[in-house]
Length: 172
Figure (cartoon, helix red, strand yellow):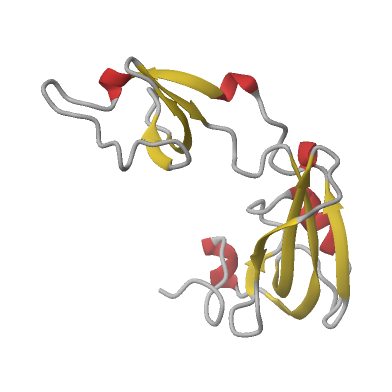
């Protein structure tokens, strides 16, 4: 059986990243036999180029490919680095939680349309907090290497729910 749309796929992979043409790669994530990555192929939940590189592979096949940043999580966009007034982080008379709101920490935020996002605190001044809302992997080339463990047809229930059930998938 080959990987194609509406198939449940199990892979083990190692994801490393590099940026700015650097040869040095940094480990981001690695799965293992006890916790493989199991997903429903071709339903739009993954990076398109990730799926394109797996399409047609069979159980036992080895893969090794790079997704350039512009085809992964995008390039860093300066418009996603914003200065937020300090008043957005403290109520009248309260003090800033400097342990939570400090450079290097990610904070859950909500925009004016109710969208949830994560922002990286870059700088804290008396008047503003400078935050970066680019994806943490933006601007980085993604290097995936691994093995296809298993492929099977998705059940009607998995297809209707849009995700894998059972071992490695969602439990209802």
